[in-house]
Image (cartoon, rainbow, N blue to C red):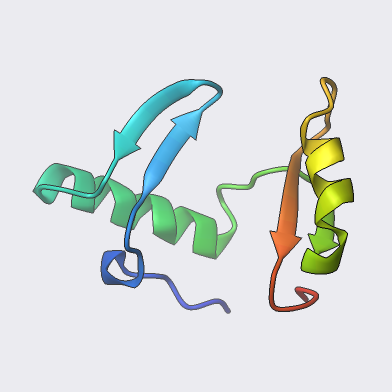
Amino acid sequence: MPQTPSLKDFRRIVVKVGSSLLVDQAAGALKRDWLTALAARIADGSLRVPVQATFAIENIKQAVALSNAHHRAGKVLVTPNGKVG
């Protein structure tokens, strides 16, 4: 089971839904509690984000081209440290 990240693991946190900015920078107890709950849901699998493709850093041009496409089925991820999973 993945380890739940803590807020101290992140230098900056930005949460967006579509083009709406929900949280920028974790400051204050309310945001900290909310982000901790969000991280727990991500870790336990109850919050999922569709991923269309994952690219190695060497294929950044293809990743950017797909990311800029108008009709994607999910996020485009770049893995700078090699393949995930």
